[in-house]
Image (tube, helix red, strand yellow):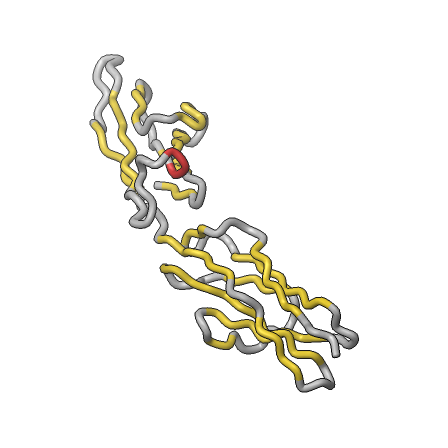
Length: 171
């Protein structure tokens, strides 16, 4: 008799931000003489209705999770559980802009973007530092700047896109 082995592979990163992207997984089973279908389990609970070898997860709650798949060999009444794959879902950073909203006689106003620090990964970690892209709607300045401050000399509405390895968020 053949011994079947089921493996789950994570195709994106192991860190996600709520509402940002889909977590993408595949399951494969070796040495099966007949077709298989899969029962997927998120945190030990069966995900109903999806029996394919590919799974896209979205809208997963914030926190640490694990995923496993059981390959069910058709006609053999055999089920083989995979090992688990771990991944984390983080809260999206919140972004605010502060600064003087009045520019007088050609003086500049300093605008500062404040991004909330993700609870799991400190902002001081090089891997999770933010970059900033500022725009006033018609032009973009400081593209991928490493600073959260700009000096503006023209009136207008300014926005900033704050990016880290996991999430983008606009304000």
